Amino acid sequence: MPLVLPPQVPCSYCENLAGKYPWHGPPAVVVDDELVRVFMAPASLGGMEGHTLVTTQRHAATLLDLSVEEEAALGVAVARTGRAIRAAFDPDGILVQQNNGEAAYQTVPHVHFHVIPMRRGSPFPPDHTVEITPTTERVALARRLRERWDVV
Image 1: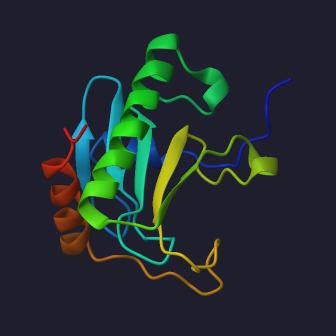
Image 2: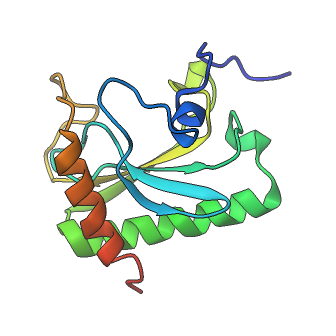
């Protein structure tokens, strides 16, 4: 039986991949290859800058819809994103979150991982409204991660 997914037609991530952007502007891309895209989240969680999203180029609604190649590529990209975040932002911790289906709080029906740098004591989820990070700031944050992408 398939998972119940949040309604969203067309898929906002697929729209981004096709060059159609939401009101807050284009994604600030860290890495783009044939299987995955890594980009800055529109708003940071975790009490600090650097919240990053890792997703597939192909539309796959959930983790259960991935090819073996996509599974491997996402795993590598999530780990590399975590290392780049550690090198760029020096967080107290890194939260990796991935949701599948409405019951698991999935809000975008396209598989993606949140890689969130955390400050000790920051409430999660935040207990306040989180503001959208301006596009220019997201682009600068993406550049910081890209410069550290090959950190071992």
